[in-house]
Image (cartoon, rainbow, N blue to C red):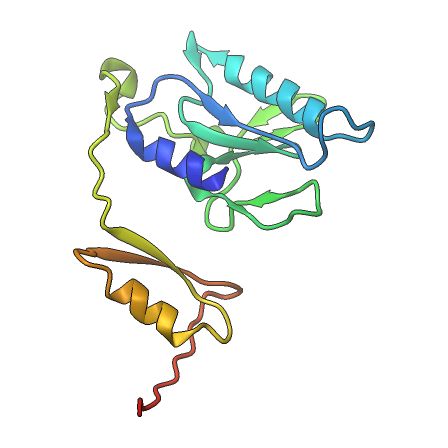
Length: 172
């Protein structure tokens, strides 16, 4: 969901309407599901307006009483109802009895995006790879990724603090 939200936020320039992704940790038919509340609140947030404009004209993720900027999220738990976090950007809304929007963090755009037309970007360079870094990563896997023909960029996906320890060995 975080990858989808991030991609959509870059594909849809000058977005004038909310796109809110949500889901649930438990299936919607299960008694204790979080899905009903997530869905209802996401719809309510998407339909919220101020001065006849959408309150949140950007791509977001709503989960467990918080609305996050989509391209600033990461799923960090498969067990907790608070499945998503935004470590590097404040959440955009808190949901309780009422919805409290953190308007100073919502992207209303520079130079009034409502006056600009939506621009959809579809031409992406496909010569990018993701390299997941984890303990005991196989050297052959790293070599294979680094030697992909016409590769222009590598996104490093790390865990924990994001540090990478490198050991340099010799090949026989």
